[in-house]
Image 1 (cartoon, one colour):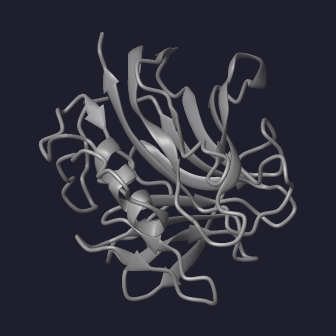
Image 2: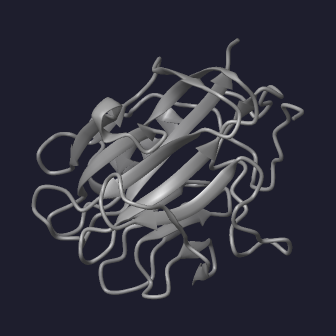
Length: 239
């Protein structure tokens, strides 16, 4: 299969430093900018889920789309299900969810911060890819399927998106071939000081058709409220 990247999302933004004294939603937006991919020009052997997100606002919206699939699991290493219901939070956030509404994978479609509709109106950074777990601990999952045999290097992190209430408190995972034993995992706790979990430099050996699952659960507090979590990541085939 040809190693190409089908960009159906919007251009990536250059990173900036985190401004001293930034708090709350402003700090979350700056954090996102600091971990964004540095260039809008993605090599043909690299993939970015946010830039390439084929969300429900696109005329050719599809799931799966290219190397990406958007879905959910009942537990960390349970069966993967596609999220086939369109998620619409106009005017700026669109994506995919299951029939109940959660878990959800959403995408900010413009170069301006997007305010979530509802009572607790979290602000999402420009072009952010957000993931939110389900009421009963179901995991929101973005799945990458390798288009060729090789070594795949990751750059990026999961990061908190919500400073309302308890703030983002989630467990985050990367599973190769849905194997929990070899998984990379961490915790996000906004008010606890763990705003992000980095996976930069991690390398996975994958064969054609094998998968990497990036997933978000409802964390140690077992409460899915305020748990929106961002994922900024570049996957590069290095050999």
